[in-house]
Structures are given as C-alpha cells and as structure tokens.
Length: 465
Image (cartoon, rainbow, N blue to C red):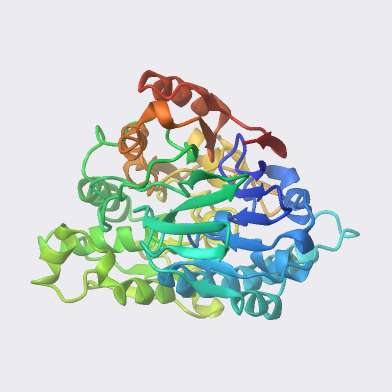
C-alpha cells in the first residue's frame, strides 16, 4: 500500500491524506479546505491532486473547515462513498459546511462587485445544495467501536481532545497475510484543556501520521486566559473607550472565550460592556456543544453545579442578521465583538477588522494559531499594513495575542500523545499539519524519544508503506 499527502503537507491547512491499498481500495483521511495561502489558495482548493471518483471511503477526524471543508466539492466531482465520523462531528459538519457555502457565495458576490479585477468572476467552490448532498453520505461511528469497512480493513476512533467530536483514526489493514496498524492523529488537543477531556491513549501502531502545529512551542508558561482577557478588555473598553475585535473559530475557540468570560462574571470581575458573538454559526455550534456534556472535563462539570449555562453571561448577545452586524460598525460605544473566522480570512470578522483597524482606540485580539499568509497571520506577525478585500489599510489598532487559547497541543502535549507507544515498534512517523521549520524542530524531539524514522512529506508526495 502507499499513502499520498495531498494537504497539510509542510503547512497547517487543507488536510487530505489518501491511502491506496494493493487491491486498489482508496481511503481518504480528511478532506479539508486550504485557508490563508495567499493567491495560491483558490487554485489549491479547486484541484485535489487525485480523482474524487476513485475514492472509495472517507474517514473524517473532526469538523473544522481545514479538515472537512472540501467534502461537498469532493462529492460534486464524483465521490459517492460513505463518510465516517463521530456523532458530534456530523452535527457540527452539517452547520459548518452549510455556513461555508453561504460565506463563499457572499464573498464571491462582494469581490465581484468591489474587487479590483472587474473582469475576473469569482465562483464559490460549492453551494448549499451540494453541501447538503454531501451530508447525506455521513455515517456515525462511536468512539471505541471497531468498524469494518471491508473484510480487510477495520478502524476505530479515540477521543483526540481537540474540539467536540474530534478523533484520532486507527486503521487495521490486512494485506499479503499480515496486518498493518496505521494511526492518523487528526488534530491533537491539550492535556488540561479549558473545556474538553484529554486525548485518549491508542493502540500500538506501525505507522503514525501526526499533526505538528505547535511542535516547537509550549503553552503552559503563558498566563491564565481569564486574566489576559480581563486586562485587554479593561484597557480597551474602559481606559481607551474602544472596541475589542476577536477573530475566533465558531467551533471550539468561541466557546472557550464564552466560558472564560462567564468565569469572570462568576467572580464579579466582568467589565460592564456589550459582548457580541457576530456569527450565526457560532450560536448553532454552541448549542451542539451544550447538547454533548459528555465531552466536558471535570473542571467544567464542577462549574455546572453552580451555573447551569457555562457559555452565557450578562451583556452577551448573539448577532444573527447582516443588518445588525453592519450596525455594530456605526455604534461608537465600547464593546467586545467575537466573530469568525479565526484566521480572519473570511466571514463577518473581516469586515469588522476593516472598519476598526484604523483607530488606535481599538484592539484586535488574536486567540490561537494563524497560517502566516492569512490576514490573522499578518496581524499576529506585527505587520504595519495589511490587505483586506483588495485594499491596503494601516494597522493603527492595537494587536494583542493570547497563544495559550490554541486548541492544538504544544510539543509536550504531542509527546504525551505518543507516550502510549513503544517507539521501537513504530516503523515511521509522518509529520503533517505544521510549518516546515517547526516540523524539523519537532522531528528531533521525537527522535530523542526513540522514534527512529521521522519523515516530513511534501505536497502530493507518495510514500510506500
């Protein structure tokens, strides 16, 4: 058999890994959208690097768009097999993919109307009808359930602790009279996450495909999230009379922010300003997460004993309509606006940044990893000028970063994730979903733990197993 890495290869987005067995069976691990790759993004999303019609099965690790966002396009181009995932992942993927289709349509209309190149007509990658068609192919597999795809291929999910429903995938494949065990980590969460349970241990593997987003970083040395949020909100809203704009992914990051802000209210410390979640998707995602309390860690369960809704507090409002979203830009009062997407590459937050970036009273708060070429990446890096919707803007607003809010584990978390394995029995570790410099650094740390063969595949590289 062989595996070809068609995404998240020496970058952190577009997760797609195609496993081809000797009998011709093709199993795709994730089908994510590329985000924040600059001018290359559109072309990378339009061309898979393989024929969707020849893919037999898709196993989805979790619902983030960089892991599931191209599934409707895959189906539109001929894929008709089953898509396996956990129940929370299916619920989230349904709303995320429908929202992605709407955002693509809206952004295409905006760019076609206001873009610099009037002759170039932008088309969405897929529409809402195609997204719904894809959702009909989803099949739920529970954590720990051994599921037989074919008589020669079985797999199971373990909790990866990254976002609700996230899973590591463990395949057992029979070829030429012997079994091969292959693990795909998906995205690995943190041990001691703000909301979720820690990643589970997993069976011994022959090959491991491991994410490496924070393979050269430690989160634990950073201050408590509540303290950092409180300081930024007080300085911006109370001292400077400005607005705090927070780009945040609708699934995971937004709920962590709401939980932290709720914690400040429970302590009587929350500043008395309006708090807006300007993302209809975020409200839907929050409801899904409320419906799955089984994923919460012990700390959240303790809070639930005194507060029945850990994601609600005084002054919070979910914004639905586009009209109301636009009205926030005309409202001069101090406030906090949480809006997707987390890398500030699409959605309403991009408009909020455009309208507030030129005022030094305001703060743009980044809360997690951003691909370097994305708008969020440029802001995090400290660029003094950024491009938004084809126009350039001076960055006069304060830009702050809370790195500790990442849902990805740091290198200690990733090494902890691997610690259930006997290194001598692992034939090879493939590092994906990371920047190349970071991956090179992390590869050395893995080798120090006894994993002798660590490879960093490049885009579309094919490797025999």
